[in-house]
Length: 169
Image: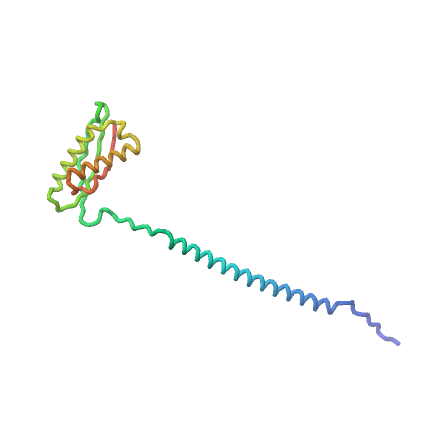
């Protein structure tokens, strides 16, 4: 008589475990599939972009290397300071210190070349007014004029006249 009453199992308890397991497996597979597709798409995009960048760089004109004008046999000689008044004014004075870059072994002695260049700078600075050397463009024009005069006086022996200091008082 005493039969144990068996309670019926709740409906869908075993199937719910099996259904949730299937659901998790499906979700995991979809996640792996989307990661693989996304990674493959990313690799294709990166390789395409790299190829386009390489093509652009190949299409650009090649810039020539900057070659220094100071190669070979050159020397530097510091000139004595030039102190003189400027043109049109007795109160405006200028002090200029410079060096010359020249090719040694030419026909002129370096000391003679430096003295002649200094004398030429002195005579040129006496013709320049204060307004002509003011500002960056004035300094640039002065430098270009002095370089041109030095090259002409030395017949190409002097490669450049380097302005070291310029004080106007």
